[in-house]
Image (cartoon, rainbow, N blue to C red; front, side, top):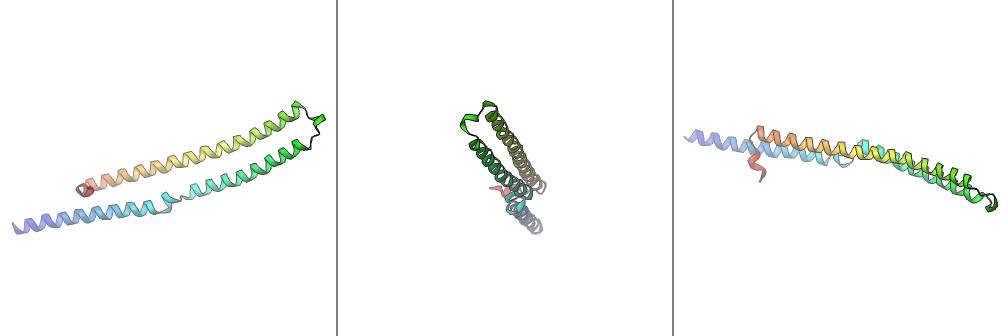
Length: 132
């Protein structure tokens, strides 16, 4: 009987240790750059920043061009052409925003997968009782 009690106590201690270890592994992963500052996100934000600077300069050039046209020679066609150029600048930016959304979704999927694996691992080791 004494050995059985020691066995169950040792098993409980092992489950507790396994739970703490599994949680520590997940917490290290959460604190890592994988979730805090993923390389893909840093690169995408860099591209957005570069594109914003480019668009700013292009729009400034469009405005300079518009204001250089004397009022007597300002036509609907000229204004429409400048407006179309401005619209094209917006379309490229929309593509970058879609990329950022896709990266965010991929990160959410990765996080959900990680938490699912943690739950499964704790269940396999029968260490879920420590979740209180």
